[in-house]
Length: 353
Ligand SMILES: *Cc1c(COP(=O)(O)O)cnc(C)c1O
Image (tube, helix red, strand yellow):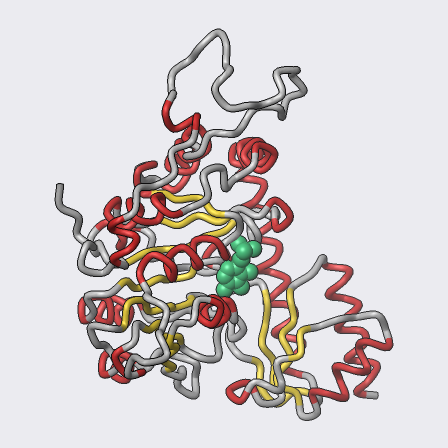
């Protein structure tokens, strides 16, 4: 049986025999379960959950309009990110010439977990900074493609800048590499663009989504990776057997039928974002408001640290990104409830006077 990504996967992952749990070995319905050393007294949680979360994946597949075979669920988005790095990138032995070592590529300023994950696994990180308007430098990324570049991490809408990345640039990069391109769409529900369906035409394009943002379930830790079956084959081989717990599965199953509720909240958040942006664009404290397709806004203040400290004295905590080289003077403001946004704007208005 051939797999499209056999050339990409680590040799030890190819060789290993995956752990087979009791629930992997027996999948039917029985009268007596004495195969997994569980406590037999029922309390709703005494049994191990489905290692492949079939019931939940079926609902997610239906919601997003694709096959359950193209889904891997993770403990947050962090787990699929880590699985990709561990399945495809060989940790760099000290003796290996660094330019030949397996690598990931990131596009600063961007989400911090890609690099953290690479660092934990001792994987080389190649950078291709976003351009001044925070768009992709596709030419530079394509120039940096090599056989050892295994994973390219793109984030759209990007965190912390808020903008969508150009679809045609992403596809151009995807076509140019034999590695995988991950598009992190944690915030896609707040914008007008998703590359989810493009995944069906480009086997090396993988899409990451999460229940943590629009779905309002940051606490249950549930991420979704959408990918070609030949990618998921390797990830399922190395993931922890029962990586998603029963309470998380049940909670997500209850939330999915309430998608219209989520969509209504997204509408309010997007309208509030616009209200905040309009206000900030008029504020004398502000140098630049970056366009956002997410549920936050990146703002360059004339004196970011002073504003940050001032807001803190009023009990308003925002994310200070001013020390990132590409985000000079910037604070990142999440869109809150209408009254919370009012409090933010009142505070900034009071400061101006
Ligand atoms: C918030 C966020 C996530 C979500 O992470 P979880 O582990 O699913 O909570 C993923 N990617 C980006 C870019 C984010 O900002």
